[in-house]
Length: 316
Image (cartoon, rainbow, N blue to C red):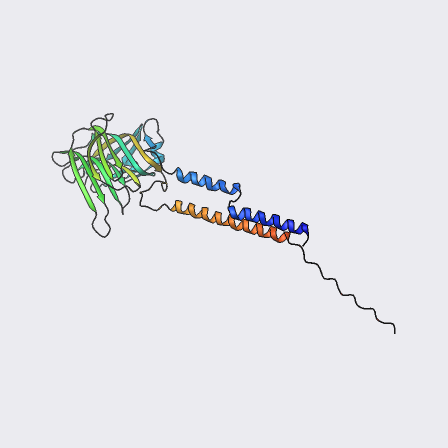
């Protein structure tokens, strides 16, 4: 082997040992990994950093953030400056809950509230009570909760605090609490902290919200926020004004939130880790293939055998 070929093989071997021993790909391949790591690290949101408002300063928010349901919504729900108005007719049987439900979802700790005014709400003759309400729905297989400002048959003006939790393989667990109240203009709210729901009320639209009770609840994503009027199973007229809707949460999103209960599996995190592993293995394979190819190029070519010279025929 010539000295030149020997030096070339030694240089190739040192280059291969340097690349394979350190197992460090080119820095260009590390940039996507670094960016993905920042994305995962930033997934933990602060305390109720997202907020939604429906008031006189956001007249288009109602149409963009909510949809309607219930009894003839175009004739029962009327947008107003800073909010909307519910109007359900009297002497009509089987009128269901009628209101708005959100397009957005709430994850982590969250709170929603609104100001109300009972314009015309006579005491119902039957049923469970008529009024206006705020609800958190976490899904049929998880649970829901509501705070209602109602008037019950007889002398029953006040607030209804209730939760309903789904139980696997059995009947759901429901809790119901009634708190007396007489205000016709005020504010109601729900605040979820971890696995506890705090019920809030104020005796005036601009007054501070105060706790009127709390019940156990779920920490799963709130799929829907609902604001509705309810005749309560009675053919009673309901005329209520709602204004200054406020919603805040650790995360407000129209799709799958980044924040979820600690026991839930984050599919996007496992998918990202899988993508990192696949990219890293590809880099290793590419480095090995490149070094092998360089080593093959450095090998001296085999000498080509010269054709045998035929002996000349002897002269006859």
